[in-house]
Length: 209
Image 1 (cartoon, rainbow, N blue to C red):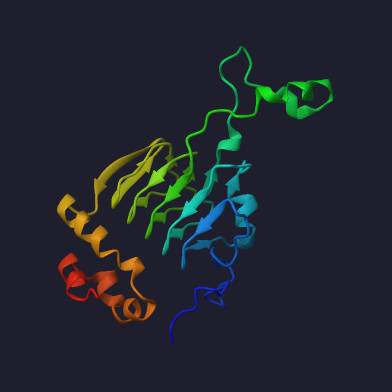
Image 2: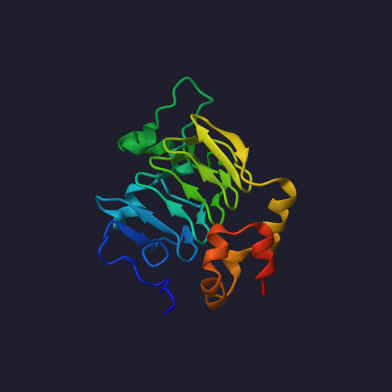
């Protein structure tokens, strides 16, 4: 039997794990199939507790087969404040006559969409800042603060997160990106789970469609 990407709790005995695609309702969040979030408290509150200051228009895009550890958070561009004057305080949002100056906090420069590739593992309490791009197959260590882009199949960690190493040589990364196993039909992917999880790049190439 094939796994069902539309089931909220893929492991019924573990209510702490949710698939994000059937959970997310915001048009500003796009999530690929089988990406999950794990939290012992309330994983179903992901949109409000883990995606912060999300007033748009920038989107959060998460690819397929991503693993998000407990406490992973995305700070979106709505958290931005003016920095070109003496004060960074957002007076207009407090109302009253201050609201007449709302134009001072609209249209602040942003870094664009936050994009997480396919097959990305974000460790416990990772904090992702606005406009970051995290490449396919990347791993981010627990407690990291990601302020800049991470390349495909990179391993990064720290505050701010720095590239520690690549999981594969450049030539193998190119082959993996071309193989793009995450786009294989579910039946073919299922038949080759062992190769995807523990094989070499050559093994993966041997079972491609």
